Image 1 (cartoon, rainbow, N blue to C red):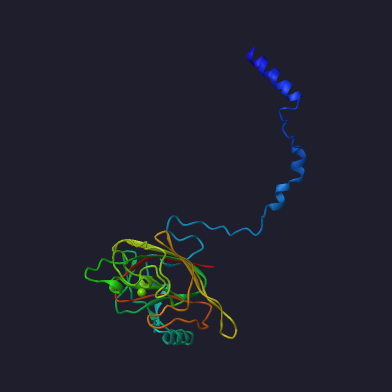
Image 2: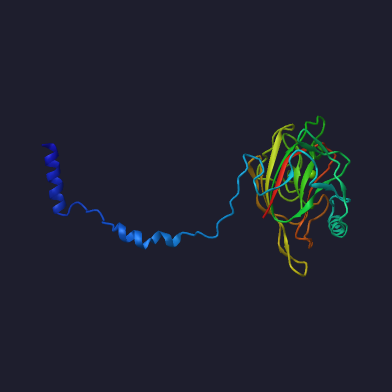
Length: 277
Ligand code: MG
């Protein structure tokens, strides 16, 4: 009886127009006109890449160190400059003198270890815009402090330094701690792990562009994740990272080797891969 009464009420309301009738969609007409297809973009297709598992190199990366040897590296005659005039003359010298010697850093237990006094090492290949993954470990070194505690550096194009340092409870100037673009850009947060533990940097670097006359077209920019945390967000560089003086841009080649710093500390590296952008 209850169902009968409900149906009766609904029928009366429907006839009287008090219940809105559902909008009728002509599905067959919609299928033939396909209005949704107008906003589908099918080309270009992004290249298919097999992703790495966690930190393993993806299929399209250039592996710079896989734990076995230093074949992708050499020792440059001159490493990096500490003042702008040095930086300029070293970069110029490198362009005219491609000769280099074998990298002398230590390879042990799947790691490459800075050999203090052996000098910087740099890649045989030159790079411009890149995505770079690199893992590093600042060794425990009691008694050391500030810039002296497990210092190294990742010099993009041999002159734009992302600092490597023990910055876990080790005070130093903010624009010189781990994750800083040395003496230019302070990291957004301190994502440092304690010394003796492995850490990672994931970097997106855009090289500067220059006009024909040598003037700057667009500055270098960098994005960095330190142990998965964003610490540099498309940050703009003022020029090469120098120890002394004010940086400025000078026209240099579109691609230059990646350099790792020997700052006298036995900093370790592993699992280094790079993708050209
Ligand atoms: Mg350094």
